[in-house]
Image (cartoon, rainbow, N blue to C red; front, side, top):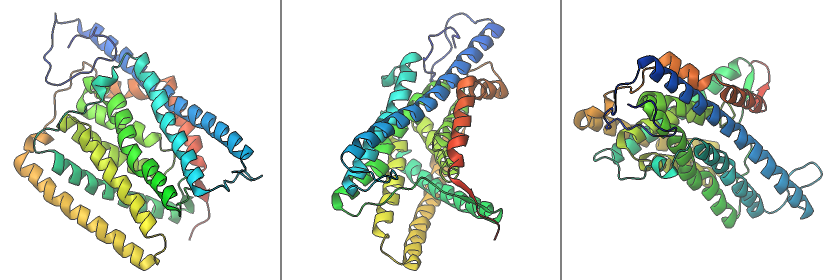
Length: 347
């Protein structure tokens, strides 16, 4: 592969090397520099996401106070439709603006990373159900982590989100939490973030994008879950060569969570837990069946693609993660996470 290709060019494993064979040391230096700048840019985009969120929150809070939607303590006291609209208005630009600016700065064409082609034959259904099964495993992992933390006297929580009671509020809540993230987050994290990283190896791109995906969630409940989901979605997006598999996994997982939350809000805990366990059981069973289908009929999915980079794995990881932008983003997210960690004493 030509190391002097324009920044932002996406590597596809099907492309053969072209041009004269470059000097290996010059190639490695160019690759390391480009990867460092990509990691730094993504880290700055994460910081930009926090800045946009704070700016929008301040603006909405100011105008909301004028209309009497907030009390003296800063608590929202308006109708639940207005509360959900505030959340919706803040969510979209928070993610889109910083990462699109990053893409433009790196000369990444959005049409290249929005891989919306038809998935490779035989991968759509297995990808969806194996992915959903891994989402359940992610939930189980979070439950185990929460129990271990509780044994140490530490309680981990997530940002509070009130469930609306009106039909209009529930519709906006479903749109904000269930539907839009499937499209926006897949475009950002499996598109803008992951696709350009594939020139350094598909496995590397999947893992690094999953780390970024987990990092932006900013609390210890969602971070491990998001990383697990990011790994499996990234894997199937790469193998299917389409964002659609990831979009559908994300859409079903989030929408089912929202619908179950709303339906079970007035149900006793025993019945609610039984419904959730039944849902988990069905998805895990389907995941096992479709995983067997993949192993039997699509075994090529589990083969490793060649790594088109002269850099070792350690040098790729250090270049992408250890730069000012990514380090500052990590520290900012640690600070955000600290708000959702409480020391309550041991059992």
